Amino acid sequence: MTLGQLRTFLAVVQAGSIRGAATALVVTEPSVSAAITALSRELGVPLTERVGRGIRLTEAGRVFAQYATTMLGLADRAGRAAREAAGRPGHVHVSAVTTAGEYVLPPILAAFLRQQRDLQVTIEVGNRADVLAKLLNEQADLALGGRPPVGAAIEGEPFLDNPLVLVGRPDHPLGSRRSFDPRLLSGETWLLREPGSGTRKATEELIAANGVEPGSIMNVGSNGAIKRAVELGLGVTMISQDAVGEELAAGQLALLRARGTPLRRSWYVLSRKDAPLPGSAQLFLAFLRSPATASMRARWSDPSRSLGRAGSESVSVPAP
Ligand code: PGA
Image (cartoon, rainbow, N blue to C red; front, side):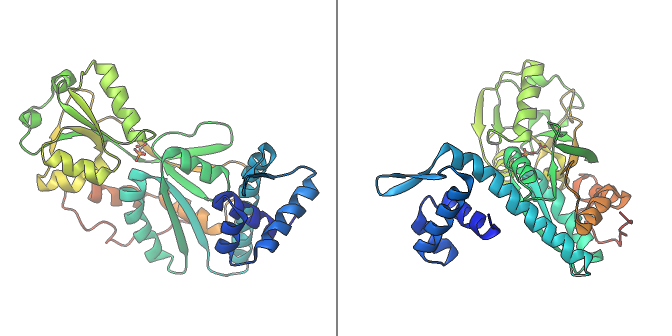
């Protein structure tokens, strides 16, 4: 079994056909077929089967595809670690849940890369399930999420506060109240992120725990769209303070101080327990843990401070 065969097999999985895989890999169709045949022969079971004029994965093929993804991910990580050990520039792969990828990671990364100019970083943003899958499949060295890890394979630690705040339109009548019963937000339209979002789950828990009865629920699949919709008076929402610091400071959104909010949560950095991290990923982990990250955050998230200067101070990277 070779890495080339595994790559070819996964290209077939992704494209759903020999022809699609050949096009994606810029090789001939017979060479793709030969790789799949050789793999199936070595494993002693067929990985694909014919349906009409196309092919589909067998059950064995579906199971093997998960391992193939992990094997290629590990091979990539091993190659990066070896190149770094020989003094070549490192390349960190980070996977982040949406809110962290949009608002938390960019300023941290900007400051980190000012210290580590030779490093390359690849970021992938997705929902929690995708982010955890990337970590488990060896496609990400580190992941950022809004909840502690689950399962024995992943470890994680909180590295920043992640308060979730309730917000409404700038002239929302409850905006001037210091502390009020969350049930006063019954009857409102609540804007919720897409299913699978950590923010959505926390909001649903808040609604249920306080007996709030929303007038209606509007599903909106992006933080940016939710902020704009709330600003225009379409409803209220709960959202990470990291995502609305700027709008709160500018008076575009009103903070709604319902009792029990802000919800106290943390941002977590997650990694696999069983796989050594390349040196560059260790450096990034040390940077996340450093006081520099926490002090930077105060500037992009705290609505009472001026914004737009995140990361402008010099920060130092502690030794891993
Ligand atoms: P989300 O995750 O962007 O998927 O909602 C953030 C969180 O869990 O706090």
